[in-house]
Length: 78
Image (cartoon, rainbow, N blue to C red; front, side, top):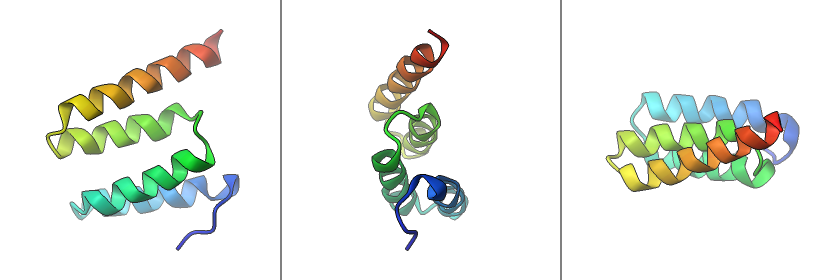
């Protein structure tokens, strides 16, 4: 288990990538949820989660996450 903290987002993302490559989507989503709890304003977290949702054929969930990622990116630009 990765300890929670902003410094550990890279570790969560690495685990998400590993689980995704192994087609362990539930585990990948679990770690992404932890990453979102650490940094709910990261568009990357939502983009990664959308990618996994697409792989799971959960298009509506993917669109929700992509819309959130776009919203966060617009805030960063403004």
